[in-house]
Image 1 (cartoon, rainbow, N blue to C red):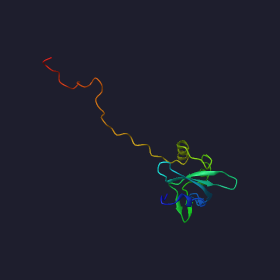
Image 2: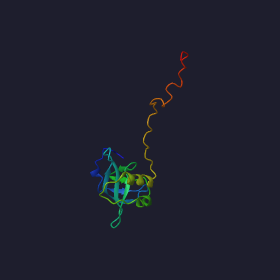
Image 3: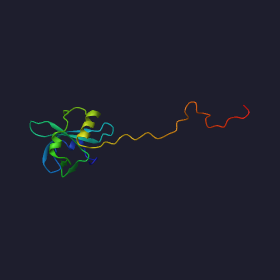
Image 4: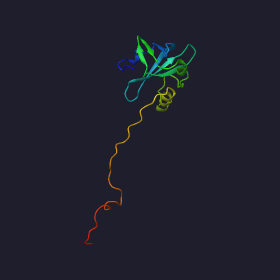
Length: 131
């Protein structure tokens, strides 16, 4: 997703699935807590239906409409957490899994030698012959 887009400018825009089928209208945009980058959009899927959460990455804003690279059926079956509330990390993880998107695992800690194990200080040292 283009990161220079003001999330307020997404609200009210039409959203289409990967086949060009209209899904609905963007109701809300959710920002990443750490970066402030737009991460999810809630799309009103019909007059009496609920909002469906869609990932803004890898979606694209093309000619004023949001193009989401998933089928409409998958989007409509997304977990429903209600709009207007903060998405918890667990809810975001459920959405990532629903869309089959891998989220990067945290990097492995560096491999460091933090010292010798207790009782092994002199294990490799030659014995003193004068003792």
